[in-house]
Length: 393
Image: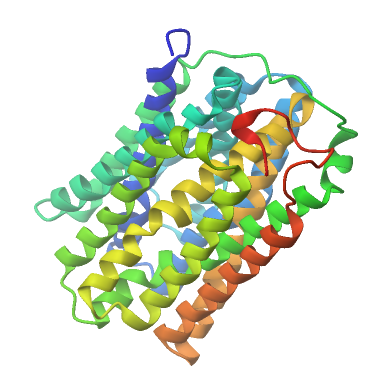
């Protein structure tokens, strides 16, 4: 990877996900500490998923039309940093909602564009994506653990300082990212609408939506579920960390895995693992060995699934549609899927309890499995890409 800006791309992922690792678990505690109700906190934090529904698509369209991908990434980093700076003195709900909406609108723009930039630099070596993306997972782990340890000794409002420093690091790395020519179109691409009429594209996006919906309950209620089963806060933290460590290992293994298996087979394995994982969490997490096994499966249900999905999207949405392809993938999966999964999970948690809530997650995963089985065909399709790393066979 002598000509690849490996450390600049890796550094960007590191700071991007380190910010998320500090923000998601601890910013809500800060909001509670300054007098917001649980309902207010829920509304403010939900803006992240709401913005991910449409923000990536808008910015992806603008990037494809203008060719100013790097400029948009840097603008997103600058506005996010400036927006977060105002949190040091904002206290009103209305002003906090306004700034949070603007901040997340710009923040959501960056990652899909960086994904397309990374693949543009990788070219035919797309299997190496995991070795770059794993630094995001490392950043997330370090931020979660270090911020939690720091807040054991310092006031909770210090989470603002931590997040600001990480957002500043993210913007600084954005300034170093070099542009790369988009991957040229291969095969018959009849425009963006034509791509969305393809059965395999619709199936993959719908399956990714289902996988994110399956994780909706997990991200919101997993810690609460474990605490209810008698796990200590330290044990809960260790199980979260175990899942992300498994994710890092699968990113390291993805080049070898892609050489041996097609992306379609990897996706099938991921959805089977998701069905098993959420049933284990819902009905067997009281046994430590089953909780550990369920967290190890995070390697497949998130790590391998995400790497395989964006590799397929990158292959199918090339040329002028590349940024929008990654943006729509982000919107449909993490945005719409995560939002729906969280809403259904919250309703199920109140009405039916933990076991049945995670069973609904398993049902989402089963729906995704069927979409891949019947919607993404094996090799030989005229519309498939011909490159080995992205072939669906």
